[in-house]
Amino acid sequence: MQRGLKVNSGDRLGKTIIFARNHRHAQCICDRFNSNYPHYKGHFAKIIDSHDKYAQSLLDDFSEVNKEPILAVSVDMLDTGVDVPEVVNLVFFKPVFSRVKFNQMIGRGTRLCQDLFGPGNHKTEFLVFDLCGNFEYFEQDIDETSQKIPESLTSRLVKHRLELATRLAPARPSATPRAREQSSTYKVDRSGDLYTSLLDALHQHVATMPRDNFLVRRRLPQVETFSQRQRWDNLSQEDAATIADSLAGLPNSLPNEDPLAKEFDLLCVKLQLAILKADRSYERLRDKVRDILCQLETKPDIPMIKGQLAFIREVQAENWWTRATPSMVEGIRVRVRDLVKFIDRQKQQIVITDFVDEMGEVQIVDIPTHQTGFSREQYRRKVEAYIRQHQDHVAIAKLKRNIPLTDRDLSALEEMLFSAAEIESRQRFEEVFGRTKSLKLLIREIVGLDPAGIRVAARQAAKQAFDRYLQGTNFSANQIRFIENIIDILTKNGIMNPGALYEPPFTDNHPEGLDGMFNNQEADRIVSILRSFNQSVDAV
Image (cartoon, rainbow, N blue to C red; front, side):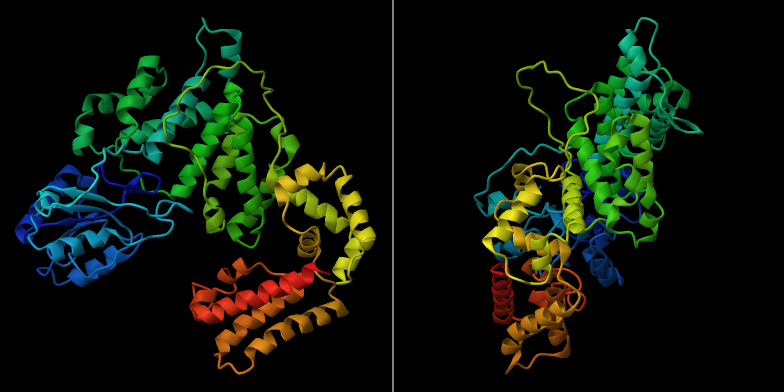
């Protein structure tokens, strides 16, 4: 529980198998676990062996990603032949005398798993706890590493909230005018201020710690002290240090929350601290929040987002951030944290480093407290809006009608774009959209093709490209519909990124999209046709 690999940003133990000698041994292991972690008793750790008539049902539950049990104490049933890709911890609590079986047991941890530790953070390793000398017995050549245990998301969130609360605390009479200004109360809503709400959250973290947990018992005097709400109202520096060092990482009994929501909480707390400290990280953190809001705005059909859409649009404006205070950021946190889960999976990742910084040489710089800064998402939207507003420009009009551009047309288009205040410069444009992408293709993606007769011609061209391929094939109705969807998108947009073949609507009939609907040879041929069509459009 302390040294095993964790998921959910370090908040929960990853799927774990303990290999026990027999049923009695397994029962003893479970009893000790339940004694040390009573708040997990009955659901977190389970024995999976032939003594239980519901063993197969438990095994099925263990095989599901977000279902308990998380820790399976196995007597032979999980040693071989079971694939649970999410398993990241193996505990050898019995001696093994067969090399074949030993290798099969190790194989329980070798299955790959995408996005296990977060979007884009795949499973690349697993841990083995060998308590019975099996590696020595089989003379396995392994590298023993002393792994640093990453700090959990909850612990990091507690520490940053604690720092924010201490900075917002009413200044003592001896404090400087600057400190008194930073300590002024920031109103969150009519029911209270940010300072009080932070103390309430921190107190709740400590007050809900299970006293019968053996980790909590080690710090019981401090836990009892800070379980009293009034104790938080006048924290000293020593108190804050005690809480950060001794209590932040202890378990509590609060309901489990969506890790993405908690990561957004941490992002907002870091932004609030950056505002108070006039820190250079302010712009980076602010732009990350704005990018998340921008992605949410693209999903107005989701009822929860629709209810906050006006607010989401309001806080993306650059002038909103010129007067941003910690309490205003708190308003964003409260209203947006439960919406982050709706962002497309490949865009969900909220990157907040959890390693200890190495301090370099100190440099003194002047940092304006509130700069409007630069947001790539905002810039992209501004450029796209500008291009749509100028669809009557001769070059854009030709592209919309699929008419070839002359060199003069292309020069006029570049002059119009790169001299516009909205575009700023060619350098800025290429920084956001890339240098290799064709300007003609980009504009066609933005404005599409004319919905009049040209779409008929475009559909005919797309259909012709695939008709030659379809001749002589024996595809199913779903496979034919898959290709018709490609033709529909080419008709609408003029081009299509092959990567879209692994996204809706192409995943409607099979979660793997193109690869799930066609064999390798057929899939390669479809991608080849699509790329050839895109190249022919780019030549226009």
